[in-house]
Image 1 (cartoon, rainbow, N blue to C red):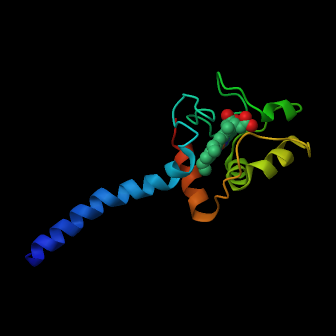
Image 2: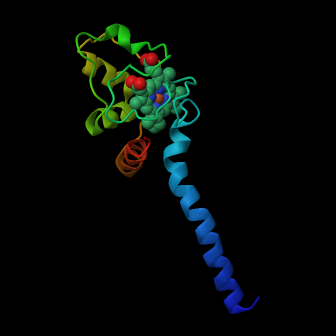
Image 3: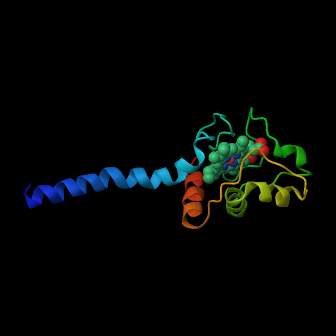
Length: 125
Ligand code: HEC
């Protein structure tokens, strides 16, 4: 293969692969249970979740709402970060109830991956 052809195919591969993997970071961790739309799957649809009140997505039957007292918390950066790191622990903290449970298993997402996912959720309007 000519050098120019090699360079051209390398550039082509970069264009195809890079955006796909950047998005897969966020999606691959959540999309088995969540749609990034209004639709509910195993978990509630995540469109518009950033800045919304916890446990209020239309038509979804939550488990953790049973343990809430008073106003729900808002899904801001700090809440989302704790949630995707360890939802089982976070739900106890957020509700102030040591017995609180959630259907969502702990995902152990942190660092740059967590930044990426939170940025992705912010963009889902
Ligand atoms: C194994 C399935 C599963 C995976 C994977 C999963 N979730 Fe969940 N998620 C759920 C379920 C089920 C609920 C509802 C929890 C309940 O009712 O207790 C939920 C609830 C939530 C909520 C609360 C929404 C609301 O309306 O209050 C957020 C935010 C959330 N998940 C974000 C995420 C993100 C971000 C990821 C990817 C890092 C993720 N989840 C991965 C199953 C999952």
